[in-house]
Picture 1 (cartoon, rainbow, N blue to C red):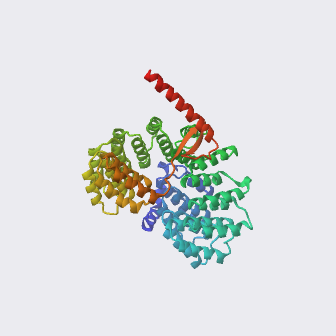
Picture 2 (cartoon, rainbow, N blue to C red; picture 1 turned 135 degrees about the horizontal axis):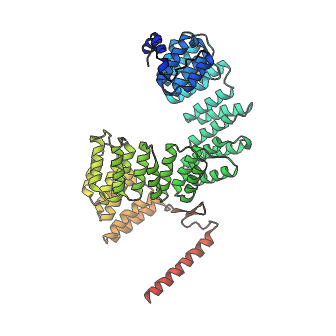
Picture 3 (cartoon, rainbow, N blue to C red; picture 1 turned 120 degrees about the vertical axis):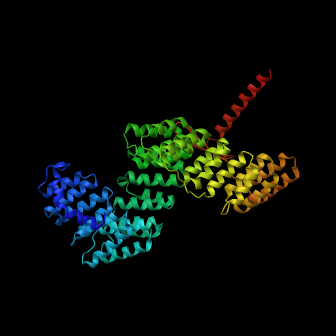
Length: 550
């Protein structure tokens, strides 16, 4: 809402007053305390307009606290433009009103929020310990670190650079731009004079954001144990999950529970991601039961993570049941479900889900098309894959990226359409990546096309020079055709180029604990037990085989 509309509303004040009797505010308040109550009960734009009319008619718009509350409430309900109009209409706002206006615009209009902050000194006002955190939030949304540095300088000039909330906001700002060293300098300088939990958590989150989990863990261990709250633990759990260290994330989550720290929705989201990466179904089910038992808010993102966990952990049935129970589904919900069905080779079911999504008028995005094309690839549905690939551009105006070309080439290669796959590679408007050439190499190996395999390996030698698997595929292609000399030659090149082969890794979940096994790892403390079990299995297999022959 712009200023002209607001002025018209003010001129129509009498009209609004005549309509009080037919609104939810039928009993007109007569004091500023009652105006506060009106603000507390506002839930839409009509309520806000009526409340403002009530304030204007009694001169309460000159009360800084009430005016700031009106601005804050408007922004909280999503009417930031209206908040700004209310602010502009006031001719002599105080720093208190300015702070609320900056906060209201920090995410929806960060440039305007910074401009308001700069106007404070021009009007002879002095920014306080609230002004800087609010404007620094806007700087993060703007993604301009130089502006943040300028505001940091102003905080120093104002003498507020050592205030706990200002320092914490500066640490968060520098961390958001991956300037962790600058954030750490501020942190070290501040903790020499005060120890604020929010500051510790901001620094932990900064390290986790850039994936520096070593320093994050060291800082966490240095943090006073009594000050570690759910935010502190969650920062580390999330960091480990995001840096492909799910085992450590789950271990830390268990330690958190032993310390009687109750996880919130954010912590649950982080550990569910780790469960999905490891396929830790039993732990994931325990977490699902924990959510039910403690009646945590079943926000959409939490349900999405549960669906993803069940699908990746092998229980697609539970994933589907959870999906069906959801009343509100976002594009992420639909995409997660389609990707889960694709992972289990349920191509037709994935296509049905995509069709239902379209009927629900949910517009697919780039990730959705990767999921549906993968589903077609796993199920060998060539015609459907061609249709969806074409409809990306024709129906939804989405330009295919290299990932979409990769899915389509993989589909064509799996089904033996090698010529069409080669033509599609030539049509890619950008450089093909290793996944594209890898799909072609795998298809060539499957159908014995030596020329195509050699051509694909030529590109892969540049993109992935130390990937032994690529050489193995070409060698196997030669061997499959009885061309042993060429197969041995490729194996020799592989040994000279790749060095040692990357060891295989597997995971297994037993009694809610995930164990990691590395091929040939004789240093594993369970090595002897593993050998005994394998020998026992071999003996049983030999016994069964012998009885079968008899």
